Image 1: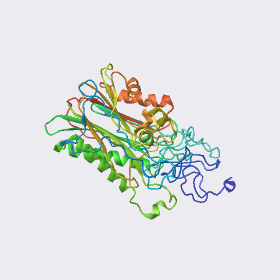
Image 2: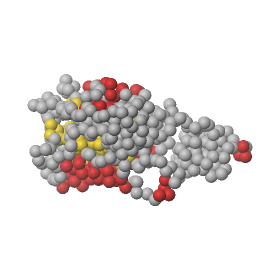
Image 3: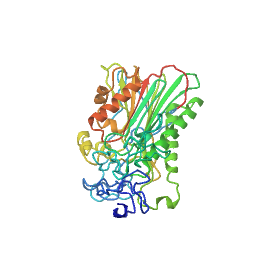
Length: 445
């Protein structure tokens, strides 16, 4: 039987190099005996030519001017009062000169696709029929394979009976940290979860509490997007935990956290030349980032990319608001007056992002803003895997449970379920942060 197996140089599923006689891929556990046709979902790369939808603007699309980082203690700091008080939600982006359409974008355009065709599902491989009857049922407490339900799972995460790779730990993650919580899920169409999040609680110098949530979305067209999102979220959290207790203004602390996250992602590209020997055309690791810091009186947001923050007041008769503006093709088309929002987000180029963290990013342009809500509510920090199914602030408010401030973990689960019920086409990550921060003491991320 083994002599009839085709000799492959790389795994048809993940392109991991193979050795002669391999029956399963050592990286993803793919069953090499059947050798099915190569799937259609070729990885998307940074734009270096015209996309399927037509020609692209020449050069890098202009970044939105809204919420450029400013000295939080000076006149340039962006501070707003949320709906219900003297001022209202963030103003729309200022009109900008429309880009010139016509020629393909250059490799240094600063625009990349973050969408790739995916199979409808990634089912577990069936147990290998050539393998004899499995061993006796493992002893109680032993981790059992999810595919054959008989073999013991070794320390590397593979079944000793059928060889199947087990689901990754990051496929579904939940965390509750004091008054805040977050949930992340692989979704129904992706083969792995490339999102990451970090939660934290600390005390300001005056003894008042501060909480924060950082959510990162790995860029699927890049190398190691899951490592990028994890590194960014952890670096940002470490920066916030160091800066806030020593009295750094929360808006400045958020700016510094994004810079620290950027450095962490950039460092992932510092690898030996031999590391890309088998995948020389892959992009540098990259991700988006969005975060929020909440104190008893302030609500701070910061971001790069197209992950978002929403404000949902406890009193649902008050209007909700979206507190971030996407670094994306769609947002730039709307800002330039070339399309309305409905047209832009219906376009297949809508999710091409114009800002991200990574060594190949055109430039680092962190956005931050400060708000003073005049009533209690919750801050929803999420990736596009959620807001694709609740894009408008009113739609997000309808999806958030009424008791979200009191039950943040339950609410995060409900919101992830909302995305999965809608189709779950992407990884889904959401953090729920009540405002104002209740006095519960300090903690760690």
